[in-house]
Image (tube, rainbow, N blue to C red):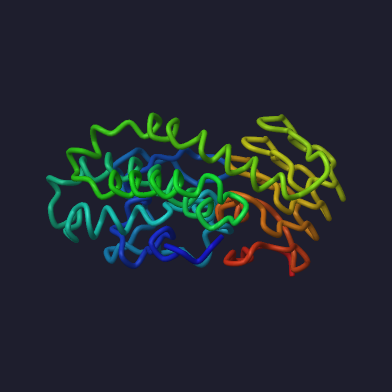
Amino acid sequence: MPDTRESALRGDCASCFGLCCVALPFARSADFAVDKSSGEPCRNLREDFRCGIHTRLRPSGFQGCTVYDCFGAGQRVSQVTFGGVSWREAPETARRMYEVFPVVRGLHELLRYLTEALARPAAHPVRAEVRAALARVEALAAGTPDALEELDVNAVRAEVNPLLLRTSELVRATAGGRPKSWRGADLIGKRLRGAGLRGADLRGALLIAADLTGADLSLADLIGADLRDAELSGADLTDALFLTQPQLNAARGNAATRLPEGFERPAHWAA
């Protein structure tokens, strides 16, 4: 991912009031060790809003936390939207803060995709439109709590999506040949070892536990693709389109997995 806006579109837990640990619900499962309702602080949340088991989330049964990213919404809602006053300091703001947080998170995810689209040279024909969309979504994210509570994020996403699709077409066209289209396909557990997926359309594809060992995923559109437990050892994700850090965190890989610039190799991946 390009470095532009990088700090603003990545979670900064030190500047957040632990919103993902309070506002979001989760159920006891393979991803979470306990049940938690919306508005209930996680039992691992400390008084300083930091996670008490951050370095051992996976072995403690909280794998779901390691594959979540607020895309910077947490610090924005905490420090900007609500002026740096926490839900503990002003309990009367708690409900609104919890409702606004997922709205801003959705807008920040769009900002992350639009920022990448703007930086893609092949998307030059739509650059002016992307820049305008970026400014509009940024303005919405900077709105007041009242405005954010009333905002329909799905409607905003529907407005932006055609532009992201056009960007995808332009970028993937540079891959050459006839790239595969598996948009929204059920590829759960599919054996794709060494597959030539350069420039493929994998938008929304279910790649859960798929074997992509050594596969070429360069320039592939991975927006919304479910990579939980997908095997990416030795795979080439160079210049993969609309890939996010949470997707990588949910997958498995190793030191031979080729990542786009700006991404971190997950700590749980094999050496």
